[in-house]
Length: 465
Image (cartoon, rainbow, N blue to C red; front, top):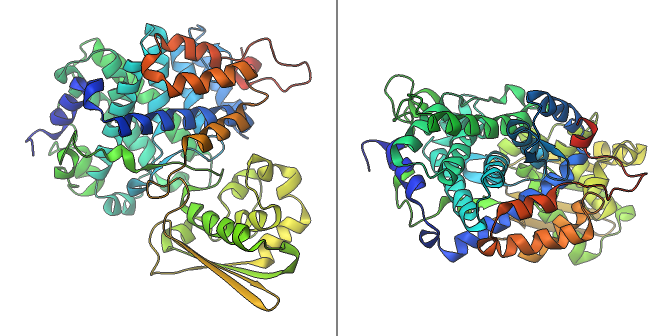
């Protein structure tokens, strides 16, 4: 282990080359990018997206950077709004060992700088790999149980480092400048679970994207910053946030074992901690052709942390509550036998039958034998009980989504936001990212244009342009 963990990680991020990234890792990074774009076009339906769009428009008056599915804003404005769009409707990625969403922080600044500079797709791919690996590596060094016990929320703490790494790689930082960018990123690392139950947890993520961008751009100006932020005795990230953490884990097999491969994706728009429950219910519904009208009870067992976060909203209020309510999610999967954003519109979650089903038909309990996202589900019907146990939700590294499933997710939510030609072009560009001459071509396809029909709802950035 290097005596200077920050510098060792900075050296890795600064020196990373396309040839250093194994093909399977490159393909996973493409999956992460396309999934983030799918989430971002869906994010225009987010309940609070208009509010963040107004903030993004107010940050500066320039318009050099593309908002995914929207109009151009400033570099800072597009970064923060794209970050929010990726996480707005609760279906972006998650690094399960740290319960941290990674793509909302890493992708927006990487795309913005690559667009501004006309970087190649190959350079973007390397920057994404570096940014995601830095985020997750710093995360595994935290000793997550200690970190979480102190109330910290991962995205706003870890995200600035990954965003800075991605931007720094695109700007060709050397080790010294990358380390200083990490010092500036760490000085902005923040966000706690006091925000849980409000959209502020999603703001942690887009603010993390902007913080990392600021850190890298300031480091590029040779701003003086600490080169060893992670393990500094007085105020270092690991000492303050995690009682010393596990810094040796940050550099263990660095460049040989890729922590970013443990970033999971979400097929459905609901909380990451209940994806195991979703998988188990879908397994039962698909296997046994269950008629919801004949179901007496659905009993769901979750891990204690998942139950604490999602098991107590039988009587949810609005959309945000519905998105994180295990009761409502289980009920709507059972009754609709699908789970898309359509299930989280007022017309569905305010249906008295659905509210009654969530409160009365779904029973939930914590099971201390279950870990993290594991779930056990029993469906009681007349004369039969069907059971399923899920260890690995759909989208997890052990049960991954195919590229085709991610493409379908993008098509589903890009429809009505982008033109059919832009949808097809985006899918092709990401699949062949290393052959893309300039990221500007990709961003041009992702920018909303005059093709919207008169009766279509305008995208959020256009509404505030």
